[in-house]
Picture 1 (cartoon, each protein chain N blue to C red):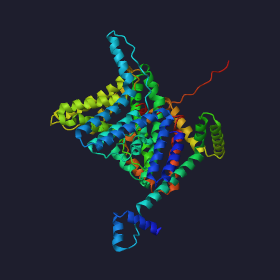
Picture 2: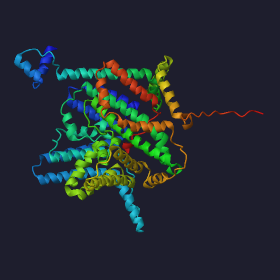
Picture 3: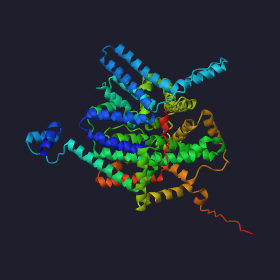
Picture 4: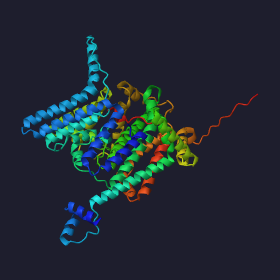
Length: 131
Length: 469
Protein backbone atom coordinates (compact mmCIF):
# COMPACT_ATOMS: atom_id res chain seq x y z
CA UNK A 1 0.00 0.00 0.00
CA UNK A 2 2.85 2.36 0.84
CA UNK A 3 4.33 1.88 -2.61
CA UNK A 4 1.00 2.63 -4.21
CA UNK A 5 0.49 5.65 -1.93
CA UNK A 6 3.88 7.08 -2.79
CA UNK A 7 3.34 6.45 -6.50
CA UNK A 8 0.11 8.43 -6.29
CA UNK A 9 1.87 11.14 -4.30
CA UNK A 10 4.33 11.43 -7.11
CA UNK A 11 1.50 11.79 -9.60
CA UNK A 12 -0.18 14.46 -7.44
CA UNK A 13 2.99 16.46 -7.21
CA UNK A 14 1.18 19.79 -6.74
CA UNK A 15 -0.37 18.83 -3.43
CA UNK A 16 1.27 20.80 -0.55
CA UNK A 17 1.81 17.64 1.52
CA UNK A 18 3.47 16.00 -1.48
CA UNK A 19 5.81 18.97 -1.77
CA UNK A 20 6.60 18.85 1.98
CA UNK A 21 7.14 15.10 1.69
CA UNK A 22 9.62 15.54 -1.16
CA UNK A 23 11.45 18.24 0.74
CA UNK A 24 11.67 16.49 4.12
CA UNK A 25 11.59 12.88 3.04
CA UNK A 26 9.05 12.20 5.84
CA UNK A 27 6.12 9.83 5.38
CA UNK A 28 2.91 11.92 5.06
CA UNK A 29 0.76 10.51 7.88
CA UNK A 30 -2.36 12.66 7.57
CA UNK A 31 -2.51 12.75 3.84
CA UNK A 32 -4.87 10.47 1.92
CA UNK A 33 -4.31 10.73 -1.82
CA UNK A 34 -7.29 11.68 -3.92
CA UNK A 35 -7.23 8.36 -5.72
CA UNK A 36 -7.63 6.44 -2.48
CA UNK A 37 -10.30 8.85 -1.22
CA UNK A 38 -12.19 8.33 -4.47
CA UNK A 39 -11.85 4.55 -4.17
CA UNK A 40 -13.25 4.65 -0.61
CA UNK A 41 -16.10 6.93 -1.67
CA UNK A 42 -16.98 4.65 -4.54
CA UNK A 43 -17.05 1.63 -2.24
CA UNK A 44 -19.24 3.53 0.22
CA UNK A 45 -21.61 4.58 -2.59
CA UNK A 46 -21.87 1.05 -3.96
CA UNK A 47 -22.53 -0.44 -0.52
CA UNK A 48 -25.15 2.23 0.18
CA UNK A 49 -26.84 1.45 -3.12
CA UNK A 50 -26.77 -2.28 -2.40
CA UNK A 51 -28.14 -1.80 1.12
CA UNK A 52 -30.99 0.36 -0.20
CA UNK A 53 -31.75 -2.16 -2.96
CA UNK A 54 -31.81 -5.03 -0.47
CA UNK A 55 -34.09 -3.14 1.91
CA UNK A 56 -36.48 -2.33 -0.92
CA UNK A 57 -36.41 -5.92 -2.18
CA UNK A 58 -37.55 -7.02 1.27
CA UNK A 59 -40.04 -4.30 2.18
CA UNK A 60 -41.28 -3.31 -1.26
CA UNK A 61 -41.56 -6.66 -3.05
CA UNK A 62 -45.09 -5.73 -4.09
CA UNK A 63 -43.74 -3.10 -6.51
CA UNK A 64 -41.56 -5.70 -8.16
CA UNK A 65 -44.50 -8.04 -8.79
CA UNK A 66 -46.72 -5.13 -9.93
CA UNK A 67 -44.07 -4.12 -12.44
CA UNK A 68 -43.52 -7.70 -13.62
CA UNK A 69 -47.25 -8.12 -14.23
CA UNK A 70 -47.18 -5.25 -16.74
CA UNK A 71 -44.54 -6.86 -18.97
CA UNK A 72 -45.60 -8.25 -22.34
CA UNK A 73 -45.72 -12.04 -22.09
CA UNK A 74 -42.70 -13.99 -23.29
CA UNK A 75 -40.67 -16.89 -21.90
CA UNK A 76 -38.40 -14.50 -20.00
CA UNK A 77 -41.05 -12.13 -18.71
CA UNK A 78 -43.33 -14.94 -17.57
CA UNK A 79 -40.38 -16.40 -15.65
CA UNK A 80 -39.61 -13.00 -14.13
CA UNK A 81 -43.28 -12.52 -13.24
CA UNK A 82 -43.56 -15.87 -11.49
CA UNK A 83 -40.34 -15.32 -9.57
CA UNK A 84 -41.52 -11.85 -8.54
CA UNK A 85 -44.88 -13.18 -7.42
CA UNK A 86 -43.33 -15.95 -5.35
CA UNK A 87 -40.90 -13.45 -3.78
CA UNK A 88 -43.69 -10.98 -3.08
CA UNK A 89 -45.90 -13.63 -1.45
CA UNK A 90 -43.01 -14.89 0.72
CA UNK A 91 -42.26 -11.37 1.91
CA UNK A 92 -45.95 -10.80 2.63
CA UNK A 93 -46.10 -14.11 4.56
CA UNK A 94 -43.17 -12.90 6.66
CA UNK A 95 -45.05 -9.69 7.38
CA UNK A 96 -42.49 -7.52 5.64
CA UNK A 97 -45.06 -5.80 3.47
CA UNK A 98 -46.69 -4.37 6.61
CA UNK A 99 -44.99 -0.96 6.76
CA UNK A 100 -45.77 -0.24 3.11
CA UNK A 101 -49.37 -1.43 3.44
CA UNK A 102 -49.94 0.60 6.63
CA UNK A 103 -48.54 3.78 5.10
CA UNK A 104 -50.62 3.27 1.98
CA UNK A 105 -53.81 2.68 3.89
CA UNK A 106 -53.26 5.80 6.04
CA UNK A 107 -52.55 7.79 2.87
CA UNK A 108 -55.71 6.50 1.16
CA UNK A 109 -57.67 7.45 4.27
CA UNK A 110 -56.30 11.00 4.12
CA UNK A 111 -57.17 11.19 0.43
CA UNK A 112 -60.76 10.17 1.10
CA UNK A 113 -61.36 12.86 3.74
CA UNK A 114 -64.18 15.26 2.95
CA UNK A 115 -64.74 18.82 4.11
CA UNK A 116 -67.50 17.65 6.44
CA UNK A 117 -65.23 15.13 8.13
CA UNK A 118 -62.50 17.73 8.52
CA UNK A 119 -65.04 20.14 9.99
CA UNK A 120 -66.08 17.56 12.59
CA UNK A 121 -69.44 16.73 11.08
CA UNK A 122 -69.97 12.98 10.89
CA UNK A 123 -72.54 11.65 8.53
CA UNK A 124 -74.11 8.31 9.34
CA UNK A 125 -76.16 6.40 6.87
CA UNK A 126 -79.37 5.05 8.43
CA UNK A 127 -80.95 2.13 6.65
CA UNK A 128 -84.71 2.52 6.17
CA UNK A 129 -86.74 0.22 8.40
CA UNK A 130 -88.56 -2.63 6.77
CA UNK A 131 -92.29 -2.48 7.21
CA UNK B 1 -37.79 4.97 -20.43
CA UNK B 2 -39.12 7.12 -17.61
CA UNK B 3 -37.03 7.87 -14.52
CA UNK B 4 -39.55 6.79 -11.84
CA UNK B 5 -39.98 3.25 -13.19
CA UNK B 6 -38.61 -0.16 -12.27
CA UNK B 7 -37.07 -0.60 -15.71
CA UNK B 8 -35.05 2.59 -15.30
CA UNK B 9 -33.92 1.50 -11.82
CA UNK B 10 -32.61 -1.78 -13.27
CA UNK B 11 -31.04 0.07 -16.21
CA UNK B 12 -29.31 2.47 -13.85
CA UNK B 13 -27.92 -0.29 -11.62
CA UNK B 14 -26.34 -1.95 -14.68
CA UNK B 15 -24.99 1.38 -16.00
CA UNK B 16 -23.61 2.34 -12.58
CA UNK B 17 -21.81 -0.99 -12.09
CA UNK B 18 -20.38 -1.10 -15.61
CA UNK B 19 -19.36 2.55 -15.77
CA UNK B 20 -17.38 2.36 -12.53
CA UNK B 21 -15.80 -0.93 -13.53
CA UNK B 22 -14.43 0.93 -16.57
CA UNK B 23 -13.11 3.77 -14.44
CA UNK B 24 -9.50 3.34 -15.48
CA UNK B 25 -10.35 3.31 -19.17
CA UNK B 26 -12.01 6.66 -19.79
CA UNK B 27 -12.45 6.14 -23.54
CA UNK B 28 -14.26 2.83 -23.11
CA UNK B 29 -16.26 4.29 -20.22
CA UNK B 30 -17.50 7.13 -22.42
CA UNK B 31 -18.27 4.70 -25.24
CA UNK B 32 -20.27 2.56 -22.85
CA UNK B 33 -22.18 5.60 -21.53
CA UNK B 34 -22.92 6.63 -25.11
CA UNK B 35 -24.31 3.20 -25.99
CA UNK B 36 -26.35 3.18 -22.78
CA UNK B 37 -27.70 6.64 -23.65
CA UNK B 38 -28.75 5.49 -27.10
CA UNK B 39 -30.47 2.47 -25.57
CA UNK B 40 -32.27 4.83 -23.16
CA UNK B 41 -33.44 6.97 -26.09
CA UNK B 42 -34.24 4.01 -28.35
CA UNK B 43 -36.57 2.66 -25.66
CA UNK B 44 -38.93 5.41 -26.76
CA UNK B 45 -38.30 5.26 -30.55
CA UNK B 46 -35.11 3.74 -31.99
CA UNK B 47 -35.48 5.61 -35.31
CA UNK B 48 -34.66 8.95 -33.73
CA UNK B 49 -31.27 7.77 -32.47
CA UNK B 50 -30.15 8.48 -36.04
CA UNK B 51 -31.34 12.08 -35.64
CA UNK B 52 -29.33 12.40 -32.46
CA UNK B 53 -26.22 11.12 -34.24
CA UNK B 54 -26.83 13.42 -37.22
CA UNK B 55 -27.20 16.42 -34.95
CA UNK B 56 -23.98 15.60 -33.08
CA UNK B 57 -22.08 15.07 -36.37
CA UNK B 58 -23.33 18.41 -37.63
CA UNK B 59 -22.21 20.28 -34.53
CA UNK B 60 -18.90 18.47 -34.28
CA UNK B 61 -18.09 19.35 -37.91
CA UNK B 62 -19.19 22.97 -37.56
CA UNK B 63 -17.13 23.47 -34.38
CA UNK B 64 -14.06 21.76 -35.88
CA UNK B 65 -14.27 23.93 -39.02
CA UNK B 66 -14.64 27.10 -36.91
CA UNK B 67 -11.62 26.15 -34.81
CA UNK B 68 -9.54 25.33 -37.89
CA UNK B 69 -10.42 28.46 -39.86
CA UNK B 70 -8.04 31.44 -39.48
CA UNK B 71 -10.42 33.84 -41.25
CA UNK B 72 -12.95 35.58 -38.94
CA UNK B 73 -15.42 36.15 -41.77
CA UNK B 74 -15.32 32.50 -42.75
CA UNK B 75 -15.78 31.47 -39.13
CA UNK B 76 -18.87 33.68 -39.01
CA UNK B 77 -20.32 31.98 -42.08
CA UNK B 78 -19.70 28.51 -40.68
CA UNK B 79 -21.35 29.57 -37.42
CA UNK B 80 -24.38 30.92 -39.29
CA UNK B 81 -24.69 27.71 -41.31
CA UNK B 82 -24.29 25.54 -38.20
CA UNK B 83 -26.94 27.43 -36.24
CA UNK B 84 -29.26 27.51 -39.27
CA UNK B 85 -28.90 23.74 -39.74
CA UNK B 86 -29.77 23.14 -36.08
CA UNK B 87 -32.78 25.43 -36.31
CA UNK B 88 -33.89 23.75 -39.54
CA UNK B 89 -33.97 20.37 -37.83
CA UNK B 90 -35.86 21.82 -34.85
CA UNK B 91 -38.17 23.82 -37.12
CA UNK B 92 -39.05 20.85 -39.29
CA UNK B 93 -39.96 18.50 -36.46
CA UNK B 94 -41.56 21.04 -34.19
CA UNK B 95 -43.05 23.81 -36.29
CA UNK B 96 -43.61 22.55 -39.84
CA UNK B 97 -47.22 21.50 -39.34
CA UNK B 98 -47.93 24.52 -37.10
CA UNK B 99 -46.80 27.07 -39.67
CA UNK B 100 -48.50 25.21 -42.47
CA UNK B 101 -51.80 25.10 -40.56
CA UNK B 102 -51.48 28.86 -39.84
CA UNK B 103 -50.80 29.45 -43.54
CA UNK B 104 -53.82 27.33 -44.41
CA UNK B 105 -55.97 29.49 -42.13
CA UNK B 106 -54.71 32.68 -43.80
CA UNK B 107 -55.36 31.23 -47.28
CA UNK B 108 -58.86 30.19 -46.20
CA UNK B 109 -59.50 33.75 -45.03
CA UNK B 110 -58.50 34.96 -48.47
CA UNK B 111 -60.89 32.37 -50.02
CA UNK B 112 -57.91 30.74 -51.69
CA UNK B 113 -58.51 27.15 -50.73
CA UNK B 114 -55.50 24.91 -51.06
CA UNK B 115 -54.70 21.55 -49.42
CA UNK B 116 -51.26 22.10 -47.97
CA UNK B 117 -49.11 19.01 -47.34
CA UNK B 118 -49.42 18.53 -43.55
CA UNK B 119 -47.03 15.73 -42.64
CA UNK B 120 -48.19 14.84 -39.10
CA UNK B 121 -44.56 14.91 -38.08
CA UNK B 122 -43.76 12.94 -34.90
CA UNK B 123 -41.94 15.16 -32.41
CA UNK B 124 -38.76 13.44 -31.20
CA UNK B 125 -38.57 13.55 -27.40
CA UNK B 126 -36.07 16.10 -26.14
CA UNK B 127 -35.31 17.63 -29.56
CA UNK B 128 -35.59 21.17 -28.18
CA UNK B 129 -33.08 20.38 -25.46
CA UNK B 130 -30.41 18.66 -27.52
CA UNK B 131 -30.73 21.20 -30.35
CA UNK B 132 -30.17 24.09 -27.93
CA UNK B 133 -27.23 22.24 -26.48
CA UNK B 134 -25.74 21.78 -29.95
CA UNK B 135 -26.20 25.47 -30.78
CA UNK B 136 -24.53 26.54 -27.54
CA UNK B 137 -21.55 24.29 -28.30
CA UNK B 138 -20.99 25.77 -31.78
CA UNK B 139 -21.49 29.35 -30.57
CA UNK B 140 -19.16 28.87 -27.58
CA UNK B 141 -16.43 27.49 -29.84
CA UNK B 142 -16.92 30.48 -32.17
CA UNK B 143 -16.76 32.90 -29.21
CA UNK B 144 -13.63 31.17 -27.92
CA UNK B 145 -15.33 30.36 -24.60
CA UNK B 146 -14.94 26.64 -25.16
CA UNK B 147 -12.30 24.59 -26.95
CA UNK B 148 -13.57 22.23 -29.65
CA UNK B 149 -14.07 18.68 -28.43
CA UNK B 150 -11.10 16.38 -28.71
CA UNK B 151 -13.12 13.66 -30.40
CA UNK B 152 -16.44 12.99 -32.04
CA UNK B 153 -17.19 10.63 -29.13
CA UNK B 154 -17.17 13.58 -26.72
CA UNK B 155 -19.70 15.54 -28.78
CA UNK B 156 -21.89 12.47 -29.26
CA UNK B 157 -21.87 11.90 -25.50
CA UNK B 158 -22.34 15.60 -24.73
CA UNK B 159 -25.57 15.62 -26.72
CA UNK B 160 -26.80 12.10 -25.92
CA UNK B 161 -25.86 11.64 -22.25
CA UNK B 162 -29.04 10.04 -20.90
CA UNK B 163 -29.61 11.97 -17.64
CA UNK B 164 -30.17 15.28 -19.43
CA UNK B 165 -31.17 13.99 -22.86
CA UNK B 166 -34.93 14.33 -22.91
CA UNK B 167 -35.79 17.21 -20.58
CA UNK B 168 -32.59 18.96 -19.60
CA UNK B 169 -31.06 20.67 -17.78
CA UNK B 170 -29.36 22.17 -20.86
CA UNK B 171 -25.77 21.44 -19.91
CA UNK B 172 -23.27 23.66 -21.75
CA UNK B 173 -20.30 22.16 -23.52
CA UNK B 174 -17.99 24.35 -21.44
CA UNK B 175 -19.37 22.61 -18.30
CA UNK B 176 -19.45 19.03 -19.50
CA UNK B 177 -16.64 18.58 -22.06
CA UNK B 178 -13.84 19.23 -19.54
CA UNK B 179 -15.42 16.58 -17.31
CA UNK B 180 -15.15 14.06 -20.16
CA UNK B 181 -11.40 14.61 -20.49
CA UNK B 182 -10.56 12.34 -17.59
CA UNK B 183 -12.24 9.59 -15.60
CA UNK B 184 -14.54 11.21 -13.06
CA UNK B 185 -13.92 10.92 -9.34
CA UNK B 186 -16.68 10.35 -6.88
CA UNK B 187 -16.67 11.74 -3.38
CA UNK B 188 -19.09 10.95 -0.56
CA UNK B 189 -20.64 14.39 -0.56
CA UNK B 190 -21.40 14.21 -4.27
CA UNK B 191 -22.81 10.69 -3.92
CA UNK B 192 -24.95 11.70 -0.90
CA UNK B 193 -26.32 14.70 -2.78
CA UNK B 194 -26.99 12.43 -5.75
CA UNK B 195 -28.93 9.91 -3.64
CA UNK B 196 -31.00 12.60 -1.95
CA UNK B 197 -31.75 14.44 -5.17
CA UNK B 198 -33.02 11.23 -6.75
CA UNK B 199 -35.20 10.38 -3.72
CA UNK B 200 -36.52 13.95 -3.43
CA UNK B 201 -37.22 14.11 -7.15
CA UNK B 202 -39.15 10.82 -6.98
CA UNK B 203 -41.26 12.18 -4.12
CA UNK B 204 -42.07 15.44 -5.89
CA UNK B 205 -42.97 13.78 -9.18
CA UNK B 206 -44.75 10.61 -8.17
CA UNK B 207 -46.48 11.84 -5.03
CA UNK B 208 -47.16 15.58 -5.18
CA UNK B 209 -47.31 16.21 -8.96
CA UNK B 210 -49.20 12.98 -9.74
CA UNK B 211 -51.81 13.45 -7.01
CA UNK B 212 -52.48 17.07 -7.98
CA UNK B 213 -52.67 16.24 -11.68
CA UNK B 214 -55.06 13.32 -11.32
CA UNK B 215 -57.24 14.70 -8.52
CA UNK B 216 -57.50 18.40 -9.24
CA UNK B 217 -55.76 19.95 -12.25
CA UNK B 218 -56.71 17.55 -15.05
CA UNK B 219 -60.44 17.31 -14.21
CA UNK B 220 -60.85 21.09 -13.74
CA UNK B 221 -58.88 22.13 -16.83
CA UNK B 222 -60.66 19.45 -18.88
CA UNK B 223 -64.01 21.18 -18.35
CA UNK B 224 -63.49 24.64 -16.85
CA UNK B 225 -67.02 25.80 -17.70
CA UNK B 226 -68.59 23.40 -15.19
CA UNK B 227 -66.47 24.49 -12.20
CA UNK B 228 -66.81 27.44 -9.88
CA UNK B 229 -64.29 30.12 -8.96
CA UNK B 230 -62.82 28.28 -5.96
CA UNK B 231 -62.18 25.08 -7.90
CA UNK B 232 -60.63 27.05 -10.77
CA UNK B 233 -58.43 29.01 -8.40
CA UNK B 234 -57.38 25.84 -6.59
CA UNK B 235 -56.61 24.13 -9.91
CA UNK B 236 -54.51 27.12 -10.98
CA UNK B 237 -52.48 27.07 -7.75
CA UNK B 238 -52.41 23.28 -8.02
CA UNK B 239 -50.94 23.47 -11.49
CA UNK B 240 -48.31 25.94 -10.29
CA UNK B 241 -47.25 23.34 -7.74
CA UNK B 242 -47.65 20.43 -10.16
CA UNK B 243 -45.45 21.89 -12.90
CA UNK B 244 -42.79 22.89 -10.37
CA UNK B 245 -42.79 19.47 -8.72
CA UNK B 246 -42.86 17.69 -12.08
CA UNK B 247 -40.17 19.61 -13.90
CA UNK B 248 -37.85 20.27 -10.97
CA UNK B 249 -38.16 16.57 -10.12
CA UNK B 250 -36.86 15.62 -13.56
CA UNK B 251 -33.95 18.03 -13.13
CA UNK B 252 -33.22 16.75 -9.62
CA UNK B 253 -33.21 13.12 -10.73
CA UNK B 254 -31.05 13.99 -13.76
CA UNK B 255 -28.56 15.88 -11.57
CA UNK B 256 -28.57 13.07 -9.00
CA UNK B 257 -28.09 10.28 -11.55
CA UNK B 258 -25.26 12.20 -13.25
CA UNK B 259 -23.63 12.80 -9.84
CA UNK B 260 -23.70 9.08 -9.06
CA UNK B 261 -21.87 8.51 -12.36
CA UNK B 262 -19.34 11.18 -11.38
CA UNK B 263 -20.52 14.18 -13.44
CA UNK B 264 -21.72 17.54 -12.18
CA UNK B 265 -24.71 19.26 -13.78
CA UNK B 266 -25.71 22.84 -12.96
CA UNK B 267 -28.66 23.56 -10.70
CA UNK B 268 -31.87 24.14 -12.67
CA UNK B 269 -34.38 25.36 -10.04
CA UNK B 270 -33.94 27.47 -6.95
CA UNK B 271 -37.27 27.86 -5.10
CA UNK B 272 -38.82 29.96 -7.88
CA UNK B 273 -42.07 30.90 -6.12
CA UNK B 274 -40.26 32.89 -3.47
CA UNK B 275 -39.28 35.43 -6.14
CA UNK B 276 -40.30 39.02 -5.51
CA UNK B 277 -40.13 40.03 -9.18
CA UNK B 278 -40.42 38.34 -12.57
CA UNK B 279 -36.76 39.07 -13.21
CA UNK B 280 -35.90 37.13 -10.07
CA UNK B 281 -38.35 34.38 -11.06
CA UNK B 282 -36.42 33.78 -14.29
CA UNK B 283 -33.21 33.55 -12.30
CA UNK B 284 -34.75 30.75 -10.26
CA UNK B 285 -36.97 28.89 -12.76
CA UNK B 286 -35.51 26.57 -15.43
CA UNK B 287 -32.19 28.34 -14.96
CA UNK B 288 -30.44 26.47 -17.77
CA UNK B 289 -33.05 27.65 -20.33
CA UNK B 290 -33.32 31.22 -19.07
CA UNK B 291 -29.53 31.62 -19.03
CA UNK B 292 -29.41 30.06 -22.52
CA UNK B 293 -31.96 32.53 -23.82
CA UNK B 294 -30.03 35.39 -22.17
CA UNK B 295 -26.62 34.36 -23.58
CA UNK B 296 -27.60 33.19 -27.06
CA UNK B 297 -30.60 35.38 -27.87
CA UNK B 298 -31.10 38.40 -25.61
CA UNK B 299 -27.48 39.56 -25.54
CA UNK B 300 -26.84 38.98 -29.29
CA UNK B 301 -30.02 41.00 -29.97
CA UNK B 302 -28.40 43.91 -28.13
CA UNK B 303 -29.41 43.13 -24.54
CA UNK B 304 -29.38 46.19 -22.30
CA UNK B 305 -27.00 48.06 -24.58
CA UNK B 306 -29.84 49.36 -26.74
CA UNK B 307 -31.27 51.69 -24.06
CA UNK B 308 -34.43 51.21 -22.03
CA UNK B 309 -36.91 50.76 -24.88
CA UNK B 310 -34.45 48.71 -26.95
CA UNK B 311 -33.94 46.42 -23.96
CA UNK B 312 -37.72 46.06 -23.61
CA UNK B 313 -37.99 45.18 -27.31
CA UNK B 314 -35.22 42.59 -26.95
CA UNK B 315 -36.92 41.18 -23.87
CA UNK B 316 -40.22 40.84 -25.73
CA UNK B 317 -38.57 39.08 -28.68
CA UNK B 318 -36.69 36.74 -26.34
CA UNK B 319 -39.75 35.80 -24.31
CA UNK B 320 -41.98 35.37 -27.37
CA UNK B 321 -39.42 33.03 -28.92
CA UNK B 322 -39.00 31.33 -25.53
CA UNK B 323 -42.76 30.75 -25.54
CA UNK B 324 -42.64 29.37 -29.07
CA UNK B 325 -39.78 27.07 -28.03
CA UNK B 326 -42.19 25.42 -25.60
CA UNK B 327 -44.62 24.52 -28.33
CA UNK B 328 -46.09 25.46 -31.65
CA UNK B 329 -49.31 26.97 -30.32
CA UNK B 330 -50.81 30.39 -29.78
CA UNK B 331 -51.17 29.76 -26.03
CA UNK B 332 -47.38 29.36 -25.63
CA UNK B 333 -46.73 32.53 -27.61
CA UNK B 334 -49.25 34.32 -25.37
CA UNK B 335 -47.51 32.89 -22.28
CA UNK B 336 -44.15 34.18 -23.52
CA UNK B 337 -45.73 37.53 -24.40
CA UNK B 338 -47.21 37.86 -20.89
CA UNK B 339 -43.80 37.31 -19.31
CA UNK B 340 -42.19 39.67 -21.83
CA UNK B 341 -44.68 42.42 -20.98
CA UNK B 342 -44.23 41.80 -17.25
CA UNK B 343 -40.44 41.90 -17.44
CA UNK B 344 -40.51 45.03 -19.59
CA UNK B 345 -42.99 46.71 -17.22
CA UNK B 346 -40.68 45.99 -14.27
CA UNK B 347 -37.80 47.55 -16.18
CA UNK B 348 -39.78 50.66 -17.07
CA UNK B 349 -41.07 50.93 -13.48
CA UNK B 350 -37.54 50.81 -12.11
CA UNK B 351 -36.46 53.53 -14.56
CA UNK B 352 -39.37 55.95 -14.00
CA UNK B 353 -40.42 55.26 -10.42
CA UNK B 354 -40.40 58.50 -8.40
CA UNK B 355 -37.33 58.54 -6.18
CA UNK B 356 -39.37 59.42 -3.13
CA UNK B 357 -41.20 56.07 -3.41
CA UNK B 358 -39.38 53.36 -1.58
CA UNK B 359 -39.10 49.79 -2.82
CA UNK B 360 -42.16 47.53 -2.64
CA UNK B 361 -42.41 45.40 0.47
CA UNK B 362 -41.00 41.94 -0.33
CA UNK B 363 -44.26 40.17 0.60
CA UNK B 364 -46.22 42.31 -1.85
CA UNK B 365 -43.71 41.65 -4.62
CA UNK B 366 -43.91 37.93 -3.87
CA UNK B 367 -47.72 37.84 -4.04
CA UNK B 368 -47.92 39.93 -7.23
CA UNK B 369 -45.17 37.91 -8.94
CA UNK B 370 -46.69 34.58 -7.95
CA UNK B 371 -50.10 35.55 -9.32
CA UNK B 372 -48.64 36.86 -12.58
CA UNK B 373 -46.81 33.54 -12.95
CA UNK B 374 -50.06 31.68 -12.19
CA UNK B 375 -51.85 33.70 -14.86
CA UNK B 376 -49.17 32.53 -17.27
CA UNK B 377 -49.61 28.93 -16.11
CA UNK B 378 -53.30 29.08 -17.08
CA UNK B 379 -52.24 29.78 -20.66
CA UNK B 380 -49.58 27.12 -20.41
CA UNK B 381 -51.83 24.37 -19.06
CA UNK B 382 -55.11 24.98 -20.89
CA UNK B 383 -55.77 22.86 -23.95
CA UNK B 384 -56.09 25.95 -26.11
CA UNK B 385 -56.14 29.73 -25.89
CA UNK B 386 -59.97 29.67 -25.84
CA UNK B 387 -59.94 27.17 -22.97
CA UNK B 388 -57.55 29.44 -21.02
CA UNK B 389 -59.99 32.31 -21.48
CA UNK B 390 -62.79 30.05 -20.19
CA UNK B 391 -60.77 29.43 -17.00
CA UNK B 392 -60.22 33.15 -16.49
CA UNK B 393 -63.92 33.89 -17.10
CA UNK B 394 -64.82 31.23 -14.54
CA UNK B 395 -63.16 33.22 -11.74
CA UNK B 396 -66.37 35.27 -11.73
CA UNK B 397 -68.56 32.27 -10.75
CA UNK B 398 -68.25 32.84 -7.03
CA UNK B 399 -71.47 31.17 -5.92
CA UNK B 400 -70.76 27.71 -7.29
CA UNK B 401 -69.91 25.06 -4.66
CA UNK B 402 -66.49 23.46 -4.34
CA UNK B 403 -66.45 20.05 -6.02
CA UNK B 404 -62.93 19.14 -7.08
CA UNK B 405 -60.90 20.53 -4.19
CA UNK B 406 -60.64 18.18 -1.20
CA UNK B 407 -58.81 18.77 2.11
CA UNK B 408 -56.10 16.39 0.94
CA UNK B 409 -55.54 18.26 -2.34
CA UNK B 410 -55.52 21.57 -0.48
CA UNK B 411 -52.83 20.16 1.79
CA UNK B 412 -50.83 18.92 -1.23
CA UNK B 413 -50.99 22.38 -2.83
CA UNK B 414 -50.07 24.17 0.38
CA UNK B 415 -47.27 21.69 1.02
CA UNK B 416 -45.92 22.15 -2.50
CA UNK B 417 -45.84 25.91 -1.98
CA UNK B 418 -44.35 25.55 1.49
CA UNK B 419 -41.35 23.73 -0.04
CA UNK B 420 -40.26 27.14 -1.29
CA UNK B 421 -39.80 28.39 2.24
CA UNK B 422 -37.48 25.63 3.38
CA UNK B 423 -33.91 26.77 3.99
CA UNK B 424 -32.40 27.36 0.51
CA UNK B 425 -29.74 24.65 0.79
CA UNK B 426 -31.64 22.15 2.96
CA UNK B 427 -30.85 19.22 0.67
CA UNK B 428 -27.14 19.92 0.73
CA UNK B 429 -27.29 20.11 4.54
CA UNK B 430 -29.08 16.76 4.67
CA UNK B 431 -26.46 15.29 2.31
CA UNK B 432 -23.72 16.47 4.65
CA UNK B 433 -25.43 14.42 7.39
CA UNK B 434 -25.93 11.36 5.16
CA UNK B 435 -22.32 11.21 4.07
CA UNK B 436 -21.17 10.79 7.67
CA UNK B 437 -23.22 7.60 8.12
CA UNK B 438 -21.72 4.16 7.55
CA UNK B 439 -22.91 2.66 4.28
CA UNK B 440 -25.49 0.19 5.76
CA UNK B 441 -27.14 3.03 7.72
CA UNK B 442 -27.03 5.36 4.73
CA UNK B 443 -28.51 2.60 2.55
CA UNK B 444 -31.26 1.95 5.11
CA UNK B 445 -32.10 5.68 5.26
CA UNK B 446 -32.20 5.89 1.47
CA UNK B 447 -34.24 2.68 1.19
CA UNK B 448 -36.76 3.98 3.75
CA UNK B 449 -37.11 7.26 1.83
CA UNK B 450 -37.84 5.39 -1.40
CA UNK B 451 -40.20 3.03 0.44
CA UNK B 452 -42.26 6.02 1.61
CA UNK B 453 -42.46 7.24 -2.00
CA UNK B 454 -43.46 3.77 -3.19
CA UNK B 455 -46.15 3.46 -0.54
CA UNK B 456 -47.71 6.84 -1.30
CA UNK B 457 -47.47 7.03 -5.06
CA UNK B 458 -50.44 6.15 -7.24
CA UNK B 459 -50.20 3.14 -9.59
CA UNK B 460 -48.45 3.93 -12.87
CA UNK B 461 -46.70 7.15 -13.73
CA UNK B 462 -47.53 9.88 -16.24
CA UNK B 463 -44.74 11.19 -18.46
CA UNK B 464 -43.00 14.36 -17.30
CA UNK B 465 -44.68 17.55 -18.57
CA UNK B 466 -41.52 18.77 -20.30
CA UNK B 467 -41.19 15.59 -22.42
CA UNK B 468 -43.55 17.22 -24.91
CA UNK B 469 -41.13 20.07 -25.51
